[in-house]
Image (cartoon, rainbow over the protein chains, first blue to last red):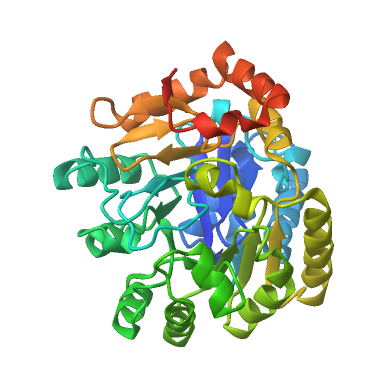
Length: 83
Length: 326
């Protein structure tokens, strides 16, 4: 999995931003969503992303895994990430 | 540490520029020189109109270095005509090689097959060409010294080379009825996106306004046509149009400044193109310093006062080139 060709990611203090330059739309990410995108950029296999994010964040790990997977599906649905 | 929470999904609102570490978008007018002298040019560009104090090569590449160091994801080169800048291709290569995305905004007169192949190989995100008419007579009237056939040929060359094409259209009293035909032509030429809005009363347009001014009724018909065209081309070409007037846009930007710097050919940085305010000078300040000042300058009372004045006197846009440092 990777970010789509026209999508740029930048880390920010609050998390990060995704810039879809074809539509010139900017999307805001919190720190954990930014962590997911960082893993995608690093080439992490999709199946391993939730586990890696769980290592970095406290909380209900079941909920984190569910939300990471929803987030990845959302990225794919919006055309921001692709296989 | 934080939990993922519901905000982990992609959130539609734009980030507030106050919270960003750097701009997200830099629109750089790399030269004021142009081969054309368009009636409506807001920059008053034209042959021999290069600023005397435009950035030299070392300044240009120093600014580019800073942009890349700050991880600015998206830049555009415009002018004047950016392709007449002697270092245009080197600047383009510099940006694209370092992973930022670049849009080139051009009048299309230098889009030879060789240049288009070069732009494709460098990996520009898109080239936006101004096409202010569907006919030779209309286009050549507004784009003084311009040639409709050459611009169209340039667009065809871009498409043939595989460079993503955007088309831009500026309405005037005498070309506005061609809007439907221009959108159709843009699609036929292979554009993936089409942009238009209202033409501003500033720059060259002030002198030519009696030939250019669009009546409210013409604008109504114009936007009706655009709405229909957006529907007609849905899924095939994006038809983007900015219906809001300048005042409405500026009032919105006072509340929500875009994370966008407008860099002039001499390194001065504007708050937004439709205001006369300068928030930095890249010959004397770093880009990070300019960004910090940009975030402060939007709250300068003179900015809101100017916008309020525009409500009373829309013609104040004629003084946008009388820069005010904030």
